[in-house]
Amino acid sequence: MSKPNIENIPAGASWEKTGNTSWTQCPGCKGWFHVGPGILNRPEVKLHCPHCSKDFAQADAARIIRAG
Ligand SMILES: [Zn+2]
Image (cartoon, rainbow, N blue to C red; front, top):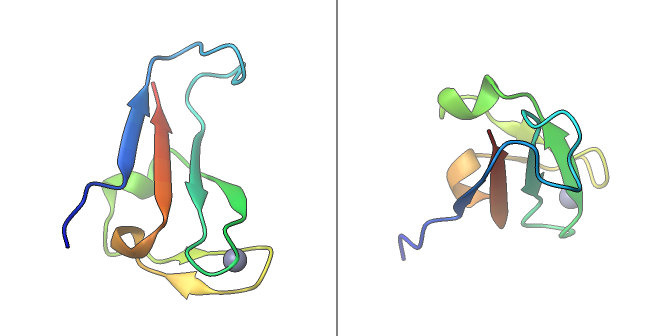
């Protein structure tokens, strides 16, 4: 039940020009959206999905991709 949902990718991945932008996938609608790089260092901060307006803890995210 504690499957890691955070993946790290190297900075400068071809699809991410800035290299320090992270993405998370909403557990509700499965939509992807940007999260600031500082947010992932603060697990107490809940994420807000812009697609379905769901608020969820980082631990509940379907997937998180952290660049850099
Ligand atoms: Zn959503």
